[in-house]
Image (cartoon, rainbow, N blue to C red; front, top):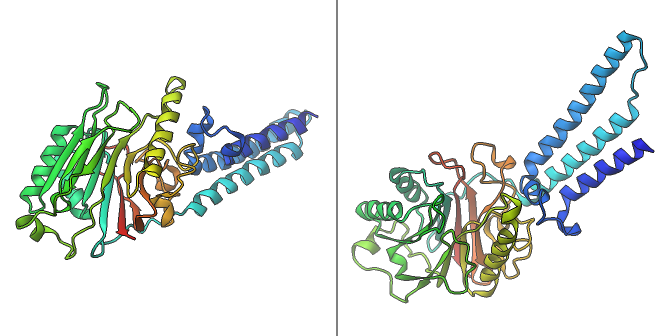
Length: 353
């Protein structure tokens, strides 16, 4: 009976980690945190199976030398098999969502390039400027980035022949910088608004197109791609609460659901930033007409945090969400680590439908 109970408990834990949404547990601690790290969970399950088999083998050797009864293999091997099967299932989910790490490549004529990066407040102006230029980005959402840094990057880009405007909103927390948005001037003018957005207190805001025509003269000549990128009507630069403690869980649930609803209900919207949630979590698990750019092109199995582990082991919590009725995702990439940030940047290429 004890052996059966242990196996049943292990199997239940594996099922919960595999499909927590079916059991209503995807937004409950500690499942919410673990399911965000499916690749790491798979490795831990395999490691647990190896340690279990190794421990039993060692125990049997010691028991044999001591002349006492050696433990049997039936339960340990059955338990190890459950753990390995659980790891395989987790790996299948990651691979099924896509692990294409080839990167987006150069943008085509008429495509909009959206870059999103949580800089952790530690990436300097030169590195950010180089990243934007390297990706040829039209819109850049920078979570945990001060307004002064964003303005300095915009000036550097403008001086290099890429006229750019910086918009920013402060965080209410003294420990975390706010959110910034860099807009290439050739897209036209944008004004900031917080109407209808979840109050994340971390600087989330919307940029609403003011209706100006793309800048003429030097700005238009500086665009590398011959055809001007299509300008979205609404861009939401987002940073939502993380499920870092039990006390933060209610806000985390509300923020993830609120941001997803903004994307669902705003025609033509682009929502980008550190959403601190994956496609397994309520809110992002059902986006309706909105789509996740990574999922659209088979790269949603690659994670962005923490940046010091391989992408397949990291949590995919940085997103570009778009209204699938207005935008077609042509490419997506999780980029190499930049500076000392604990997040990797992501970039999406979009074309108008």
